[in-house]
Every structure is written in C-alpha cells, then in structure tokens.
Amino acid sequence: RALAEALAVVAPALVVGVYTGLMIDGAPRLGARSVALSFVVSYPWALFQQYGLQAFFAQRLKTVLSDGPRALVCAGLFAALHLPNPFLTVVTFGAGYCFCVLFRRCPNLFAVSAAHALSATLLYHALPVSITHLMRVGPGCFAHMGLF
Image (cartoon, rainbow, N blue to C red):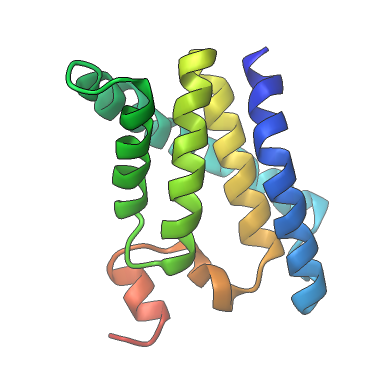
C-alpha cells in the first residue's frame, strides 16, 4: 500500500519532468538500461536520506510540532541540505513535504525511498544538465556552475 501511494504521488511530477526533458532536448540520457542501473545505484543513498528525514528530523520535531507544521519544517530542512542547487532546492522542498506526509500515512521507509530514488533517477536522466547541474550540491554544484 505504501509503495502504491508513493508512486501515485510522484507519478504526475515525473510525467511532467520527463515530458519537459523530451521537449527541451529529447532526453538523450533516458535509456531503459541507464535508468534501471541508476535506480539500483541511487536507492541506498535515497534510503539514507529518507532515514535522516523521517527517523532523525521528523521524529525529533514530533515533540514540538504538530503534523502539518512538522512536515513543512522537515521539507525546509531537506531543501536546505540541497543548496546551492536551485533546481534541487525547489524540487526537494516539494518532495520532502510529500514524503513526510506519505511516511506519516504509511510508515514504510523502503517505499518512500523507492519513490525518492525513482524520482531522482528519472529527473537526472530526463532533464538537461543545465537544469539539474548533475544533481550536485555544495561545492560540487558551485564547480559545475562555473563559480569555482
């Protein structure tokens, strides 16, 4: 149930992202084999990030914030951890909020991690590097943007 709900939530955004990538530059990196391999490789990192978001931040904020504000604060923290990448900062705020709400409804870390890894994989492969900055954050993003 948790995986079905997670996929239902992220699917519309992924359709828009993939369609946008196809319209901008034909999404040349969107091959089935590369996407599948990327998903398998990125899943452990998505699981680690979701563990941090759900089990560390959300659980600690549970004592001081109710459900709605807690999801917003967690989403803000999650987005801030993806700075200075403008694309990732915006996307992870929305995704972080959705993942927090989904996890509260169906507390399954593996399901939200799968949705996270699928989202990251499809957006990375579908959108141009000029938008995603190779999904880098911190100094790696600055270097890719030519600021270092």
